[in-house]
Length: 255
Image (cartoon, rainbow, N blue to C red; front, side):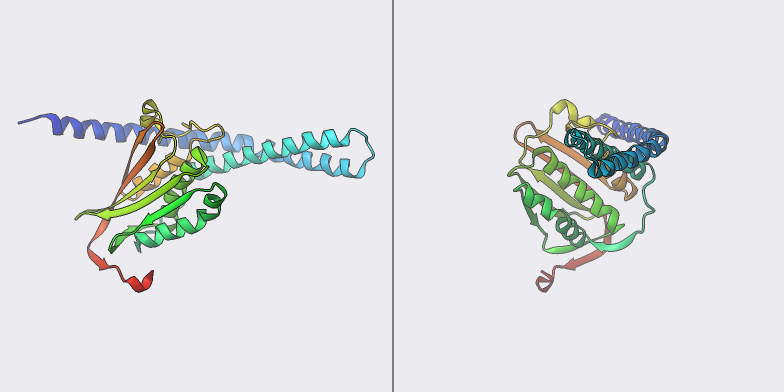
């Protein structure tokens, strides 16, 4: 009898445990760091606004230069506040409200929310729905966040003129969703780390978007795998349990 399947299962379980420990530790660190920084940051932001308002009323000849620096402080403060908000959301995810929802409806709503950003990036998003509606037990808002983060990840990493394709299928147990882009791809050495908290290859990335995707899917007993060819494409595959016995033939009138 071959030991290979057993070894592969054991390795997969070990990897999942390591990832869970990373997520738990990151959550604890996030809360502490965020609270320590949030109050001083608020003071900096308020003081900067006061300086800016004072300059507008003054006749100080260097005020334009100072106003420029003031705007830099404001933008840096807003950026830092965004990171802190993401840290707190990561460490204290919302309570799940699981309901029977159609996968198509989740994807459609996520697409609606990101379409303006896609237009700015001159990106094309193509959706291929299956012939049947796939019903899953999920928190619709959290699952929207999964698809938003994955599409946003593609747009921020490549932005101009990329194509994102989302398709779905199913087997007896799972709904399977594929999200693919034809951007610049991910280095092979980075693939094992992209779901780690704070890991990012983007210049201004927080490294929390894909970590949150992993965390949300785990709460739905779902999995995600990533494949990429540097300079060519990146593919994500999600497997989420479908509701057994629920095979709703797609009604063309709903399109």
